Image 1 (tube, one colour):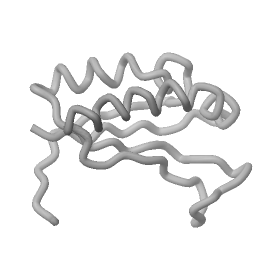
Image 2 (image 1 turned 120 degrees about the vertical axis):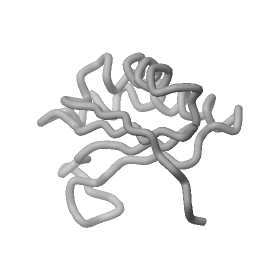
Image 3 (image 1 turned 90 degrees about the vertical axis):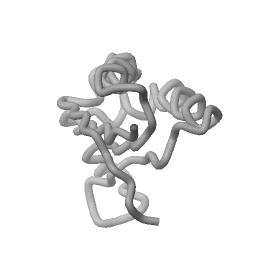
Length: 99
C-alpha cells in the first residue's frame, strides 16, 4: 500500500536541511530504484520553485510500504528526522486514484 509521509520543517532548519540532503536523497533513490517511490519533494515556504533563504515548509513523500508501521519506521530513520530538520512528522495511508 502507498503511504503519504509528511515532514514539517523546524524553524531555522535550512542550513541543516542542506547539509543532510545528500543522505536524505540517497534513501529516496533507494525507494525509487526498487519501484516503491510514487512522488517526493520539498514544499517551499513561499510561492516560488526556488525559495532561496525563505527555505522550505516541509516535504512530502508518497511511497509503497508493507504496512503503516514499516512506513513510520522508515521515516524515523530519515536524516531529516534524525538531524532535527523536521519538527513534526505524520504518516497516513494513501490511495492513488489519478493518474
